[in-house]
Length: 108
Image 1 (cartoon, rainbow, N blue to C red):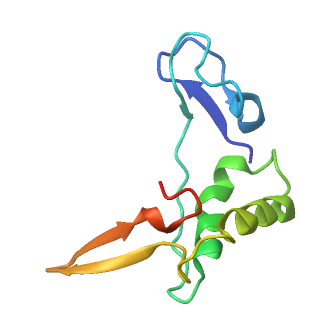
Image 2 (cartoon, rainbow, N blue to C red):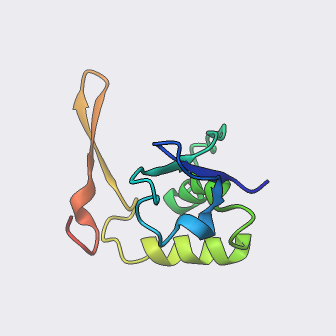
């Protein structure tokens, strides 16, 4: 089922991911958000970061991008990260964790 996106200001008709991808703000000045939020089932702990990312993002583009093309896009997007797990997760203790998001090719 194709997900539709609406403006946070309510002044637009629902649009597909392809329609909003390069449009930036909605014509009414709002941000595009999904019309409804999908229920995502977590992968098994042995899944790779890429497999988990695909499972979480897929409902947002389903029906607009082919599954195999999407898997290729996501795999290539994460291929250049230095950390084996793509994102380093540091245990701070007391059930608190920190994602080190600066290890990627952008050093963001």
